[in-house]
Amino acid sequence: MEDFTWYGNQTDVEGAALGALAVIEPMIQRINLAGVINQHLPADVQAEFDHGTVLSLLTAARLYSPVALSNVADWAQNSGADILWNIPVEKLNDDRLGRSLDAFFTQRHSILATLALHVAATFDIPLNRLHYDPTHILFTGAYGAAAPREEPDDGKTLIDAALDPAHITKGRTMDDAPKGTRMVHAGLTTFIDELGPLPIFGHTIDGNQNGRTGIRQQLALIRKLLKPQKFTMISDRGTFSVAHLLRLREAKSYAICSVPWADVKSLFHKQRKVLKWKTASFLSIEQQRRRDRESPLPQEHYELSVLDHSCCDNESGQSIKCRVIFVFSTADQKVVRQQRQKQIDRITAEMQQIEKSVAAGRYNDKMSAVTKRVARAFGTSQADRYFSWQLKKLNAAECKKLPSAARGCRPPTHRFDWSYDASKVHDDEQDDGYSATVTTVPKSMHSGDQVFTMFREQNLVEHANRQFKGPLAVRPVFLHTPQRVEALVFLLMIALMVYFLVQRTYRSNTSDDAPQKERRMTAATILKTFSNYTVLIQRNLTGRDVSPTRLTTRQRNILNRLEFPTPAQTLSRRLPRPPN
Image (cartoon, rainbow, N blue to C red; front, side):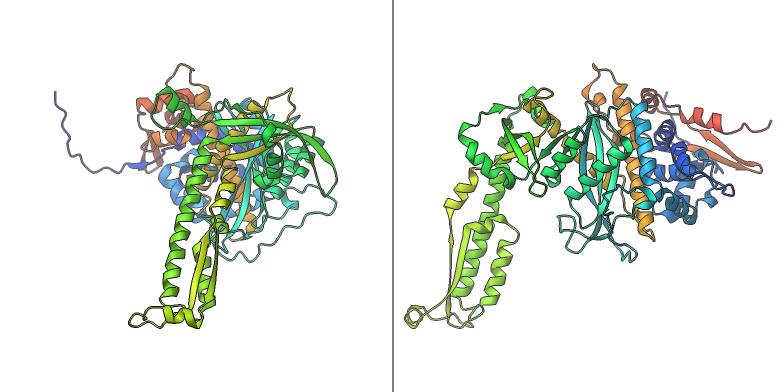
């Protein structure tokens, strides 16, 4: 029988787009976020709502649809968050949210650490292997109250209210950060296993500081607040220093850290002839697919050579035994050579054009103009070392031999001579595709191949950072004080933890024989599945009647996999039944 679609009468029933809150709110309840916050921020007896309730709602807002504080009330009404959190919309003004952020700032490290330990215990997360990766957060506005942090002379680790907010200031120029951009850096500490990444802790540093400062402060905070037993800390080359290795040794723990090639280049060339290479067992997911599907695309791989070594800290004079794992990547070699050739081709074309311009007489006696144009041609490319040039004044004999100047041009007075040294390119090609990782992990614990596999998991931390700057959207950040900015950044770290806990829980409850798409389900896909879920609201003389709509089969299956109640079950427990 054919179904017909009919026009119905107008109704006063409203719809609230509960959407992803069907997943977000139960996870916030499971980790007891409001309770942990209130443990550190006792409510004012005169306050209508405790800080835990307000801040857990704000966390949900950032996960659902990031908005400015002044728009949170509208979001709560449109999504039904005011019903789930039992806060009237008119009470969700930016002053109340701002006061809760102010309070949160004074206990931000302690709250995050307590939550991390609670999550670790609840979800069986061993704190034995921690990845660290910093990312920058960009800001607009003056933030005149922002000031550099001053570290105590006695070396104590300051936390919470005793530690000023990170200085919102100009940082180094990057692809997404033009010169002069104001920023802070947020470092995430992440646990990674077969279920994926889980950001567990974090910290901020001034916008003009580097990864070495970030990892030093992060390690001090981890030791003070999380107090893990022996653990391994994994990080990228921007954080490497021998002092970092020594600090981890003092903590009876270990390091796996990539190292700038310049730091080990001479060691590599000195030992190159005696290094023994083996193919690494690690393959990226894409390379695994190419092999499984017999793809015609190139099958790339890594080769490893492990060298026992000893690193010395120039400042303290202390040394530490380690292993240097030299890595050769067939893919990296191709990429580096392609990029270099692209730079060489671009500079060559520019040099040829400058040569023609000078020969046409357009740069007579203008050495400064030629210098600027060459500088633009070189840009920030490292390929400039392959080129040399000079602007040479023509003598009388050379001028006589020149053909007549073109109409509208003056006879040239100089010649632009330049050259390209292919031998330097050949020298640099000998290091193409090579990198190095330093580790203090004993051989008895993990082989060089196992250490390299653990290090390659660092890519998942970068994925978490992309979520931090993308879907969770630190911006729009329209806050008046650096303290509130910092509080919001820490709240976003909690939001990121919730986000990946949803993903982790789904994967952990998925059987090993399920399709790979199910076993690798992402939080983004889960939240999107609920984007069209709505509850209905009927207003009457006594208040509001809230009616949940029916879940789709897919939505119900996800909630079952997550072991979450349905919106109908949640609302029936929290809201009273209407009088007969």
